[in-house]
Length: 252
Image 1: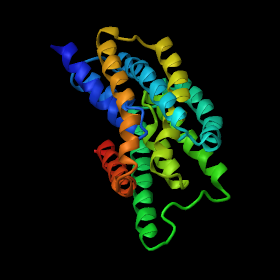
Image 2: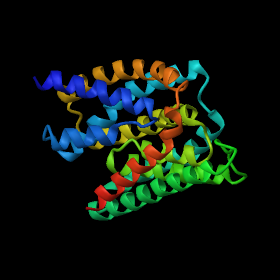
Image 3: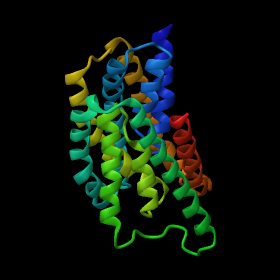
């Protein structure tokens, strides 16, 4: 029964995280530890390994649709990959309470920032402002934050990456596609380090992986349909609220 439930959970999460540009490792991490009782080290390794096939499939589909902004994505990766490595090496020395507060504050600030930008856009004729001249610096900063989330705690870092891409002015599904592309490389590096220091529970990971792969096939096709609707107008504020809630939850 657990295998069936893991497959269903993987399908649901795989569809939504690829659709909205996340990696899902943080969600898998919470489920594996909170619901199925895996140890933190094993859950971190398992969650990152689980999301990799899903991310590869999603990124390939978005690439074929031509929705990935490689310029901004690569700018993020230049700082994200070193941050993943540094975070992975330093993770054992960082107390959990310090990490939770840092991540919580980051998520709240990003969420509020996205909401403020959305409200301002309502009073502007340009609904999708282009990236500013400081976009390279900002992209690098978001890459560092996302990379540290992957390296330190086995999370995908998708929340920071997708928020950063929205704040840099990318349109809805260009942002989610580019986020998926960035997360492929970040999660691969993070998985290698966490596998070396932990233990992958394949009994839990494989059903999640299979379900997530099916979700990753569905999501890009669903994105094409949703892109023709008004749902994209509400995507940014919805993610902003979600980030703020995640941040508050992390501080409690």
